[in-house]
Length: 295
Image (cartoon, rainbow, N blue to C red; front, side, top):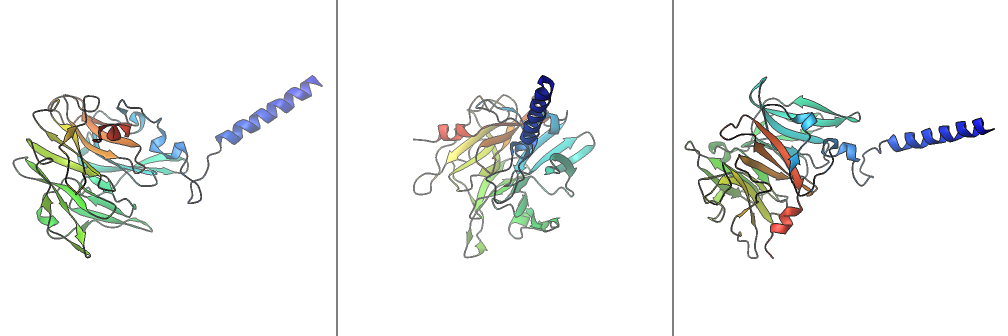
């Protein structure tokens, strides 16, 4: 009798364990993907930056320019080094209950995905989402073809924020609104933002309430620091705020972006001074942004 009771209890325990291991399928009827389907299955960080998915994406070379799709099931980034002689766009996708890495040719610029997930921006070019995947690379057209753009991001209403790089390395951050179905001539952002040795790689919040970018200034911690400016009443921008010593270091800190759900901040950090070919992607709880917002 005791043996039969033990067998029944064992079978019941195995049944419960099996139930816990079943992954909830993602669909429009569910609130959100399971943890395994979010952030490459990583444990979320706190307010101290941590390496992002080191077992999946980290190499001895350079990883940078991170971008998630809105459903958090595709993660794009740029890799260079080793077998990747030139900048290469890499994607890690959640398929068949696992994360799968592949290359997205041809490389056309630093990735940014629109808030609706339908457009993959690549500097002055873009690709559109189709039933079979991304379309061929297309041009943004005039006047963007004549501008050397490293990174272009777009707000929910379609306003472009991008960097214009020059041959001397100096960069200017600009924006272009869509008015009446037409794209206006790009304008430079104010001196609160375009100040210092150079400015590059902007990220605009979906509601345009803040802008994050990297640059080099006298008040910085080192090679390149990340800054933020908040939109004020009347549409002006606040003075640039350094993201602080927890994020910025003596090394290059750049390519900041916030995950589509607004929860986490991703950025790139070099491993040594003067060597941009060795760098990693970090992430941190995005609550620090609200802590910096002027009261």
